[in-house]
Length: 178
Image (cartoon, rainbow, N blue to C red; front, side):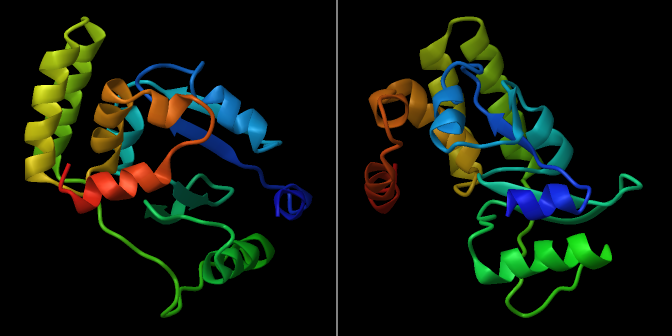
């Protein structure tokens, strides 16, 4: 798919949202054999600007810089509806939504404030304080997956950074209400 994107004169910019910096997400980019550029947002710029609360995300931006489509959380180019949407956008410049096209809403500002306060505490070395604030934020917005996963990552780094991300463990955490 990346070849089709670049052949159409377009490109991909990947943004990893990870408060612990670029060293931890880099192996995932390399393991995937990604040919496109990935930058790291170690703060809340992407979250605040685009209302992102989960990953993976996708945005289609036209050649005039206008955001034509976005899906924050659940963007997967391997899904037929998403692949079709991207292919048609590349060939025609048009976004053609269907009943199968995934769409979602944006982040709750109150929970975003908790996310940012937690980041400040984490950045100052107060990991326990950050965890408390993030838990409060997750009470406000349980779907704020960036906050939830950052909390899990600092409390259980082995589930995120030692080889493959442990999605089965994450699923159990959600089922158990963590």
